[in-house]
Length: 257
Image 1 (tube, rainbow, N blue to C red):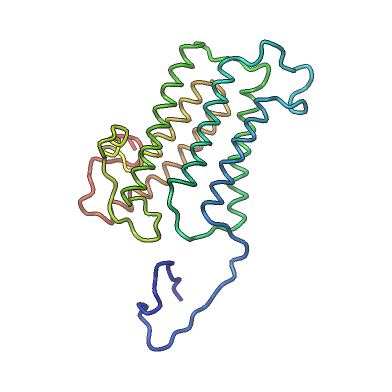
Image 2: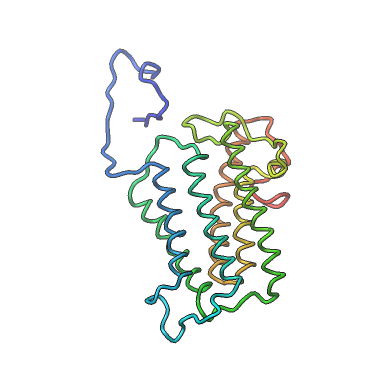
């Protein structure tokens, strides 16, 4: 038997006067909003614990002494915190989700991924023996500019998708494919189907440059691979549903991928 979509009405089903419906107990499940709030709140709090260096995190031989953490360490903390605060705010006020739910196992898996990586990169960036970037302040400033531009771009795309109805999260098919607006940050739609992922990758590339930390680079690489998979799926969906979809657009990287 076929599964019914959330938006289907019983009177519209291709059945006779009588029909048999089967219900399956899927066990404990949570909505998308709760899933994302759980995923993003953890890294924010975990990173701050390492930044403030609670006594049981680092050994006494590595206790931080005045004048305090390196400026890049403090800058990284601010950027990391702003990133996840932004994600939490978008989850509550910007993103639209279906009424679908996810099993507890998926939430645990996702939280282990986000929380685990947050602890790993925070441990090294906030370590008293942390080595600052090779090119010092110029490297950190360039990375900061790139970081902020990508954050603004990412938010601009999310807002554009929300207001245009092209996010595909309202429980029905895409009403239209996304288009650039007067906002310059949305002009990336001319070249890729999922510029929100492009900007997200840019955020973590810039954070990697800023901190010059291997765990951040690993997190960036894994995130890029996963977002590429999602972008390819969305790109394929757009091209299948809309015959006039722009041929120039790639999935996530302009002219490349």
